[in-house]
Amino acid sequence: MRKFSSLSDQEILALAISNEEEDGRIYSDFAYTLREKYPDTSKIFTDMSMEEDEHRRDLIDLYVSRFGPHIPLIRRTDIADFMVRKPAWQVQTQGIEAVRAHARQMEMDAARFYRQAALRTTDAATRRLLGDLAHAEDQHEQAANAITLDRLPTSKRESEDEDARRRFVLQIIQPGLVGLMDGSVSTLAPVFAAAFATHQPWNAFLVGMAASVGAGISMGFAEALSDDGKLSGRGAPLLRGLVCGLMTTAGGIGHTLPFLIDDFSAAMIAAIIVVVIELFAISWIRWRYQDTPFGSAIVQIVIGGLLVFVAGVLIGSS
Image (cartoon, rainbow, N blue to C red; front, side, top):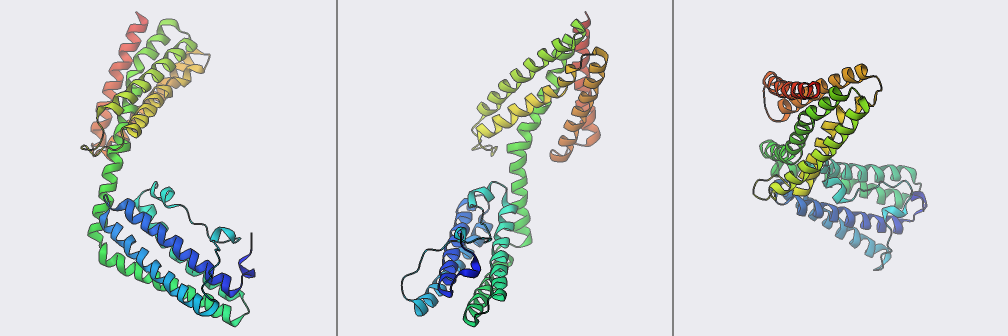
């Protein structure tokens, strides 16, 4: 892998052309992916892609005038210590805010790299060329900011962010909360019934694991088959089913693990503490994402959990 300081002016210009082409494709991918859910942000990236294309044409014109029509293929991955661009698909999975931040960082990184490179070279022509590239990136960043202010005012951005939050709640929080509630509450009765019936922590652990895994599989399939998410906006059935199933299993395993303790009394105390933590966690999630008053959420969840717990204890003690 070559060092940037070893490149000639011709190679630096070829690298700049390659960079502009890649960045333009990334912005184009962002625009295409966001066109339905975030139309205003998509338009911004379309404009930024067009700006990159203009820079690419200017760089090609400059290259041809100095070095002729053949442009060698030099990519940023061929250069040591060159800034690495994450693929568009990887950034998109992190949400709309991550996409916006990545785009801003792309322009800042490019300008800073060219400017620092210009300071390290002793050749006047190379210094001038790198300075021009840094200036071009600065201009692009300023243009992108202007486009953002024009196309995505605060009201539209807040609207897109609210839409993103709503989708997150529908597709992740809601199925996860349903699973956590089912796993935490429904498995209380069999676990504590087995514990009080046998006074053997290991038996309670086996029952709890079986109930948790079984409930997770059942809830996962039920959630995935409930609807395809197209009309409800609840997202991909497979994702919802996976989230619901995993959270159901986790909710049941939480108060099952303490029964790995050999001493029955210690295991019981630890399990009860875990149950209390689980119920408060569920109440907090309902308050945080479903606008349920925290006091009401605690009362509803605790009463339901207490009834199931008492039922398990009574059945196990009979």
